[in-house]
Length: 172
Image (tube, rainbow, N blue to C red; front, side):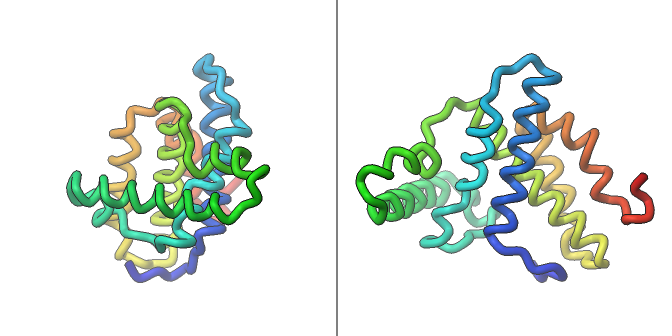
């Protein structure tokens, strides 16, 4: 979609990592979980790293049907292996855990939720500039977050997302 505010993968990845860390902290402090918040932040930091090779594919295309989704996952894995192949052998295991994560579903759900929340924040920022192209995307992204069934994301959205809607003058 047409953007009023430019965003690059570096900015998005950093924001996603900060949000993922916050989700893990919410889980630990409010939901009696035992997440490794720093590890989850690192997973999020590297979550789109393969786009260096593949480029970014719009979510509606990526998840259009099971065949496209499976093919894209295979492309992402090939790209991750390509990146790992470029590293010295003694460094591969340190980056493999982020580029080809084998973490449990609850951990990866936090990363996915953080990615979606970052997209939601992008929609809010675009709306604040008057860009109406993001109105529908904002609603569908918010629904996608709710559909994840991630309590940490629900708490984040309730407590923190409304602050992104405010102007600087409205913040206390």
